[in-house]
Amino acid sequence: MPSVPVEHIAWSKARASLHRYSLADSAIATPDLRALGLPHAAEMPPEGYRAQAELERLIGERIGAPGGRVLLTAGASEANACALAALLSPGDEVLAERPGYEPHRAAARLFGAAVRAFDRPMGEGPGGAARPGALAEAVEQALGPGTRLVVLSDLHNPGGAALDEQDARVLDALAAQRGFRVLCDETFRDAGRLSCGTRAALSGRWLATASLTKVYGLGGLRIGWVAGDAATLAACETAQDALTVQPSLLSIALARALVPHLDALRARTHAILSANHAAFGRLAARQRHLAGPPVTGLTTWREFGVEGEGDRFAAFAGARFDLALARGGFFGRPRGVRVALGGEPAAFAAALEVLEAAAGAFDWAAEAGGSRVLESQRERA
Image 1: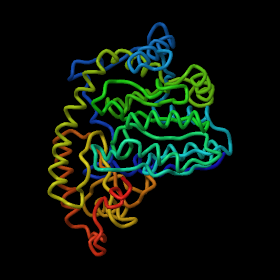
Image 2: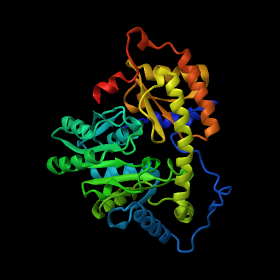
Image 3: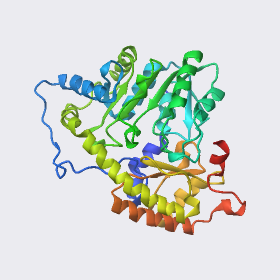
């Protein structure tokens, strides 16, 4: 098995938290469950791991998963690993979005797949959404004869844009015609305003992964899942038998107790994001280098006019202003940076002040060449 480093995860675990200010953590601020009057502790359920089947059913019903159930995993990371292991054989080709979440590419390579990128179109719509149909066109142009799987995210990580309904329908038809599957990482989906759901319900050509980590702030539980047809879930469960086997029973018990309160936690998330989106919008109006599409989810992507400038700005902000930013190179596009939007509003506002100061002090190479922020995004849209 090849050694495949995952630089973004390694940096997030070891380095990001060392900074005084952070706009790197893509999860909503962790809720104080006790203060909110919600279940905050669990005991071993007397029925043992039969509790897992109940939680799988509860989550499956909540999102409208095929067959009314999901396969529970240790977070979305294991969900993605199980899905990739179930769908891929050594030598298969995976087509992954760029900018995109690095572990999607790394885990596919870990299972022996060849990975190529397609450029996810970015526009000026909410969250950087492009015109309807543009994503499906980009996928079709990038498909090769050996493509067995297309991997994308909804909401997009890092951009925050929702997957357009037209794109989803066209992708499904294209998958039927060309014989590939679609893996949709829905970890950020519920940060949007749509009702709970899953693309896995579209057809058997789709499967989806998600978790309680990002939108609900329950990362410590490490509860994720795969949604798909029965045969796909069975293959994913076989892969899981070689990984964690099953999630923590204590995590399952607490997650099960919290299911009736997920709408309340989601409402909390939307309230935090409403304040933070407005604050970021005001900053973007003042600081032209951070201008771009209106934000919609837990993250936003800002792309600059010179290759490598996003990585250079992230390093500058960290070294000079003690501010953690996820550099664009983690997402396969080093001319941008990802800004996380889910912090507690007071801490987020303080970090935005530092971001503005860093942007004001940075030597923007784009100015010398007359480039504009997001110029390449507008050209692609």
